[in-house]
Length: 396
Ligand code: GLA
Image (cartoon, rainbow, N blue to C red):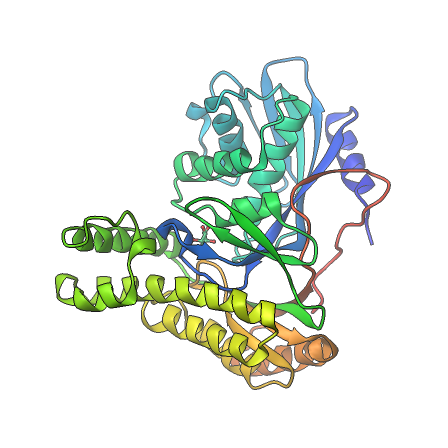
């Protein structure tokens, strides 16, 4: 087991001076997929995989990053960040520095050492963890004290404009506001949220299919455009609507003829998924385990058939998991086209689940999955270097 002093040592080796340590978590989404950019509801939890950063001050006007994961550095003058876009991992932290500056919170010159534990490209928001860890650290060391909502919006802006990925607000928001032991119901329009305790008898088990299909970013942006087209066409007859959040199932059915089949199905996923999130919250509060399982199954089917963001590996992982004892629900999580599934598993069965799902998936695909039993965790924070531990590795 390593401790944050590890990252401090690496910082020293690399930059030679003292530093402060911060971290921000990745996330897993229990339900509410692709609803965030439709101003709807999501129910993610921050997980105990973090991006760690050590930050020290500098005497020039530069911001200098070093990524342990990529074994590579990147730097830019604080006065000229926009022209420094590189089309690599470095655009995430550089973009955050740029977006902080754009929002009037110019960061101080700094050296930043980055160590990410969130598996890259797995759909567990390694990029949001990186953005929020860097954003939190830079605003903290520059004494700006911006609030967490502003920080999450700033990080989203960095990803939308500087990196060029049109993500919604879910990942950055939960990385900022995550609460230990809880999932967050987030209203992505008002940005109000409620922390809901994950029942203690449930474990969040994340199964990584180990595939990421090509063109997923382009497909993500295409889904977003199709949702926007749905709103434009529906607004012609439903003038009050701003987003798919405002459309009911009945309104969608009544106006089906106004939409192409593809756009209709995209809209049907969003409208029904918003309902499922709210019903899931009721079920979690009342402990209705059977109800949870049904909602997660419906969510997966809707993502597979209507939104078309699943893939054979995700479908197989869900199918294998759903047949195991002690499983309260299984579905794909995150943007899709590979990555992970989320499984709610009875605590006493989690270990056996991990072994048997892992073995079966491997025997059917030849791919060795990583399976993590996750804790719902706290959002971005400054660390006491002596206390906390760094998660060393995946469980399987
Ligand atoms: C990605 C995006 C999020 C969200 C999910 C799908 O993780 O970053 O904003 O849209 O996909 O729910």
